[in-house]
Image (cartoon, rainbow, N blue to C red; front, top):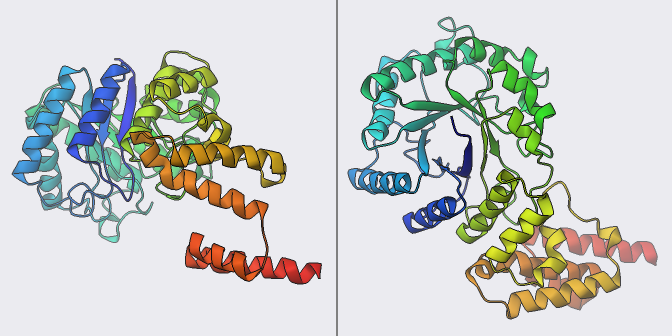
Length: 397
């Protein structure tokens, strides 16, 4: 089976338009990437209102999306995430879930996914006694689902995101996690499992850190990579090289999918970075190539380190007056002179970086600075910055 490389529309707080989805699907095809996972947390029919059928007009648009993607050799994977309210003992709930996933199979999806992420790790009270653990309940649900779905669509593939989807949620160790052990004993042998790595936002992905979960799940693992995701910090942008990722990871998993920003032109750039990784390019070379394809203004490279991976932010103490001046000169060009769809997505991040650097250069408690801070920053942060500036002034004098 070919490895899966591509895109996850799986973030909180944003939903793409159909035009944006088609744009990203075309980008996947251009980069010889093969997977688009549909799982936006803000789609109510996907998660909070999962029992409600999608409107027929929506399903028709999705059917066309799946068909067109298939023509470009991109597999669209629709997901259902019922875990917040699913009753594992309910005949009615199972029937609704099976029907919802079957409808996707009926319109042409040949891979579907069940997501049980970001829910409590304990069985609902009504299911205790019927199942030994949540892991067992999930494994048995997957077995039943896969069998029933394949009666309707032979050869259909089922993917799964477990409740424990990173090492950090198994502090006792992956091999000693009761949830993962019970899941591994009851999950069908060909169900592919999403895994984010050592943490939800993994600093490092290689064969060593992924080997344990791969062994436990018989190699049926695909990485859900949140390196570039910013839904948990929407005031930040990560658009740098594919840091901390080694191609040795592919010895342990069946592919890597990016769950990035929800900004289509930014995500198009990041898919170029992923394609470079897939093709074996060195990290910096892959990023530079993707940047050229995206027509990023050369001035961005002066400030690119401020938009690197979340675990590699530059230290303020290393910023001299000269480096601040160079960065602000580049930012002035990027904010006011560079014009492109990507620049429009990045404008607030570029502008706030310039604002932060200006604050770093000219801290103080003068009335003018207080007014400037109040105008540039949100109320809570403005109050903190003003208070700290006043404290520094008092300490100095």
